[in-house]
Amino acid sequence: MPNTRLATAASLSALFLITSLTATPALAAGALKGSRTDKSTPALIYHNYCSVCHGDKGDGRSRAQNSFVRPPKDFTAPETKNLTREYMVAIVRDGKPETAMVGWKTQLNDKEIEVVVDYVRARFMGIGTVPETVPGKAAAPAPAATAPATAEAKSSDALAEYMATAMPNGLKGNPAAGGTFYNANCATCHGVKGDGQGPRAYFIRPVPRNFLEDQARNTLNRPLLFDAISKGRTGSEMPAWNKVISDQEIANIAEYVFQTFIRPGATAKAEKTSRK
Image (cartoon, rainbow, N blue to C red; front, top):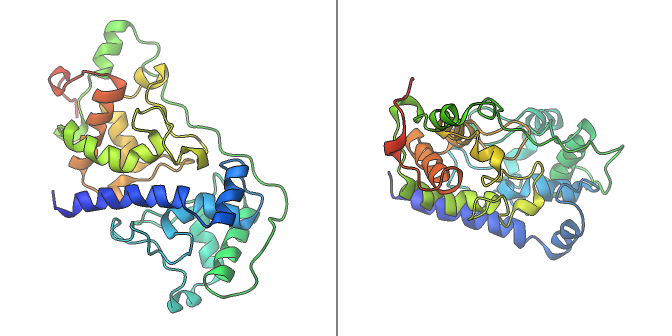
């Protein structure tokens, strides 16, 4: 693994803590007084959904800028003035392939997407007037994704076999390496204890996964963890890490989560042979 990985991990950790806890005083105070999904003003929509990557100043100069294959957009750069409003609305709505930019159409309605684009264009790009309100009624937060129920109806023996399924593609996770990455990057949302109570969890809907719940412990085997980390989860803030890190690193994180939270004490030796 390149030496830059540790720097990447430290950078992402610092980013999440900084954007969650040290936003501009007036904005941070307003966000903390409301719901973590407060969408009552364009400024709060940007703060709660966009600033974690693009930064409170919209310049993309957070410590995450070197952590992605393609860094977050710097909206203060002169060339961004060439971006049309329609193009930006489409990107916020549907996301952008081959980047870490996810689509927000499951959590923001059309008016909210349009007004946050107008906010970015006015505040950071110098185009138009900064909007103060959100037209219409805010959309309800997307419901939390439920874990697959396939394992719940299994007998204890079948459940044990299901939970022992190996990583896909013959991968073997290194929990020590995965723990380093998890604590630097994932714990800001999922918590160091895996209970979904990380410092950034206050701002997130659906709430981060609590790996200590019975449902999680009876359904999230290694392949499901690998898939969730790799591809992200639609309708949530869980990003697709396969845009940033390798399959081996994803397997390391999955193994750490599995051994530490899902099946404490489990080892790779207990895995059954992968059927893939």
